[in-house]
Image (cartoon, rainbow over all chains, first blue to last red; front, side):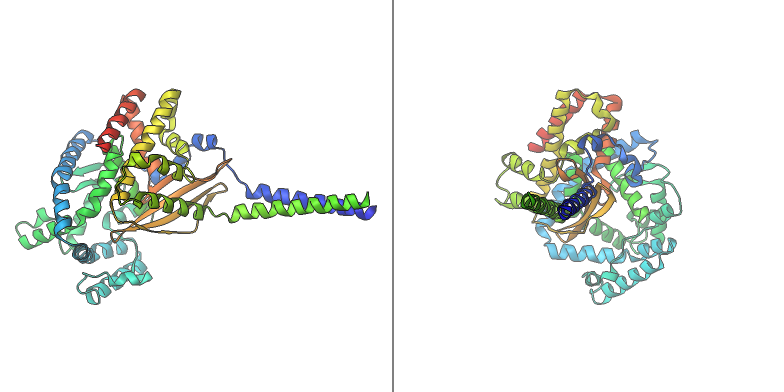
Length: 252
Length: 204
């Protein structure tokens, strides 16, 4: 009889153990709680905001850009994709990406990310040589030669410089005072600076800049359409998208 | 009596181990595998007919596939945040339907029209005891897009997506800011009208 009591006691102990394991394994949350808990507030990147004292002017430029994208860039892009096959487009994209090396290098050095700076240098060397002047992304095969892309505005953010305020540039779209200053810094090291600064110096550089911009459009335009078509307020959607994106970059 | 007690004990033990095994099976039922399978099923449906069927034709199928891993009611209520309380029950129902359709319609259009993307999913990372994050990479036309899914272990539903981050941009947070801006000057009825107009525009 005693042995049976022992068996029963052992069974009860095992049941208790199983019950406790089950409870630990099932950390459920109620759907209602999930809807009510405002844990978005704990997510710094998602909650990043930006001052927009010139919202009226910015909205007007956003409206102008939107009309240009939809009525000029989009039809043009359809034709461009039809005329220029995918591979040459990809090659051109790689070429311009490779030319952005000095900006990324400066962004890394300003953040004291010397490991990533050397990875960027390795990537540039491999793509310039084995990648035939950058037209092929030969470095993509090497895990250590694909660091996250850094820029000078991002470096300023890491130093603690705040956005300042939101700016929508004609044609170029969203930026902030901080990131605009970063872009100006980038012009010093960029082999193909902003076109408007170089009109007098070299028309070739302007042509290259236009080719770079046009070549990237097919990749951007569909996503841009999805964001604006599905938005309640496309201006706020793009402004917040930009702010969260940059906050994420600075956090990296 | 002795035999009965012994049989009872053995049965109880067998039940206990069966329960333990089922709990272990539930644990090994990786939310990553479930999510990956949902997304692949979605792509199968979108690419099944070379884009000849419209979103309206496939709507029920798309929603029923996504319902396996996505809790749209949670996603939309979180996106509306404090503005949810400003809607009556009929408006809540309408807004949930209209936003779900608008978002699905616009984003599946892009997926349906292009080539089938290749996907890779990382192992889940714990955010808390009942929340995880799964990073994924979508490769389409030679470009990579980073998508992060946030999932909660919801009672009676299991692991469900409650937010999606595109290149670290939280969709729930992005919509929350748009709704906040809308409700500063406009009403719930204005929102319903706006959503209907947008949906008609996307349909055309």
